[in-house]
Image 1 (cartoon, each protein chain N blue to C red):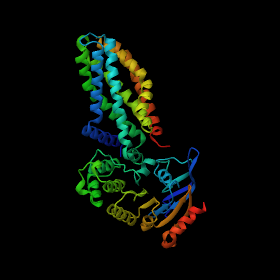
Image 2 (image 1 turned 90 degrees about the horizontal axis):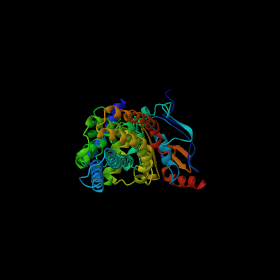
Image 3 (image 1 turned 180 degrees about the horizontal axis):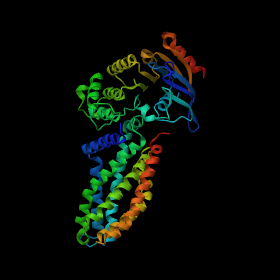
Image 4 (image 1 turned 135 degrees about the vertical axis):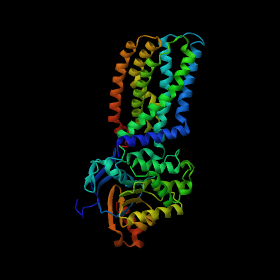
Length: 239
Length: 226
């Protein structure tokens, strides 16, 4: 793979659920270290796109290549450097906070999983709750644990599906901080949201997904933040 | 990282939760013992049962109680979408299948540590106690039931009527194994030579190989969303 080849390359991606079309030919290239924020209304196909990139769904047509490799080849190796924050917490309620992180760290083959788990608990300000069952955590704390879980393998590609939903201000600032650290370390991030303000805070590229199509894609510097909301609605109305 | 290590982590996590909550194990042992007590009352307390009837009673209690454990193992993964977390981790679907089948196998073995003694206390007065004959039968049924059951519970866990669908799909599939187990157990309880038990053990082993292979190959399709 050459220096300029994209880290992630998506071409002609289509996905249908029965007769309902979710994605209609998505083409997208992302360089290593880019932070793409995709906006779109409910049912635009945002979560479907992330699920395909995460190998949770198979596309009907099209291809996803990461670092030059087709996702179908060696998916386990690709997944070992993938992190995801979804609508669901992916946390075992009957395990303690530390046991959850330790289990995932071990599963990802992290050396010294306990140390990594303790380090992440410090980062998301949950170190004092390490022995608490996950079921007893508040919603905001569960979200912070979810963020820590997604970072357990130091992902090269992080997928975030509406990560700010239900977060209190503290948890939102923890997430922002962690995203900034990952971005500074050249990690590639894709976030989907319909919260325009949050999405624009940290992204380097902005996209709009509507009715299964990527109708807008631009570097953030080329976008005027004060008019982006109007631009967003104009693109939705045009369909 | 080796597949074996990943299976070990997943198995260890499930057993840790089970030992902490004891949801599946207690319900399996209690329900199985309850079936044995009810059948003991129905057949007349203190009355002698023939080896054929005894074998049937033992397997009804084990099979029906084991379904409770099967459903729970996957229901736990469905909570908070943990199954998706496993699917986006480096662990392969085959390794998830192996770990879940081993969890079910372990739970069945542990519940039988309660059910077999209860069976002998209630029905064993006139039956032969042949642990060496009974042990391979129990292990083979546990293997066949847990591998087939793991596949079926993965299929039914994705539906709204999980509890209903699981036994409806599973029982017809394991009928050949159950019939062979009843025949083998009858021979063991009647103190017949081991060669007669062995005649049933061979097809039981074949069943286990076929269903374990089929389960391993089909599991990735059963567990995925699409």
